[in-house]
Length: 337
Image 1 (spheres, rainbow, N blue to C red):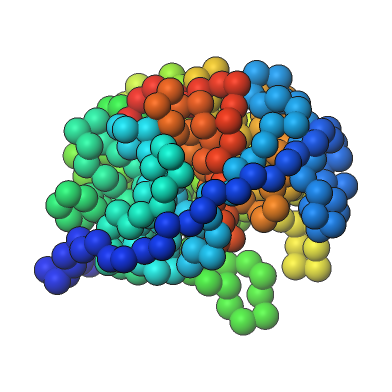
Image 2 (image 1 turned 120 degrees about the vertical axis):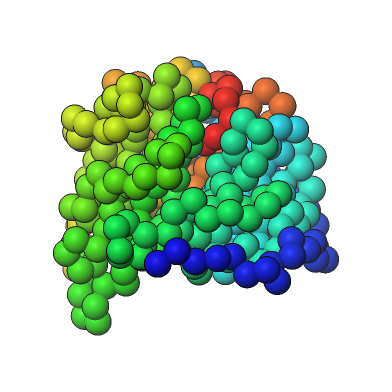
């Protein structure tokens, strides 16, 4: 049943401490040594490989701030700044080009991931009142259910230039004693510009991050419990076809609860390389799916986006912290995500 955003949701700004920037030195291991990276991180070292065309060996990672109450959904604004969701505090936070951290929007309804339309309107997927909405400058519900069944907990979204929206729903929380959600409760969805919703898949174990290739002919989907990043072909009408494994994930492991990669947010650069947040760090693949390397971080990343005036800065958020990495590449020059 459709819901309405509360009229009391005034987008108020509140006092918020500006967090000082720091730097963390990095070194150089290879993609195949992801497990060793995790061990080294635990000892306080932050080595990273040289990833051709992406980052130099020894590049420094800037710690923008930590202690945030949840960190998700970063997206670039026109001025090069980044806005991300501090989802446990129900607000959006802006990182300025000079790393100043300020509040951007309060009382979001549980915004988890963001995208920006060409006209500047901010879209979000909500977890508090599950759905896809226009969040700012005005509030409008775009979708809240598939058929007569409300969404569970939408997690991430990708916005095409054409107005098509693709988003994930990892499903209801698993039953007590079960590490997996109820069968059929997960979903990869397609919302077309006319407001029609189609469920593309209900068998991805835990659909999470989602992103489009630079030419928008391929959609990538992260399965947090899967061994590989997934890819779909985007057809001319916006529908999806030809699901296939795209790239193995360095963070994949098998635990007592079953297999998991921790795959979360996805960002693409203008050349079609695919950085993905996983339990190993920022796992980067070539446009053909070849593993290029992993950028290890002090904390496991959750999501990422290119920002800055020329889109050459990679912003990574996760586990209450936000980082910035100067790269050799640039993000895709388009609104959306």
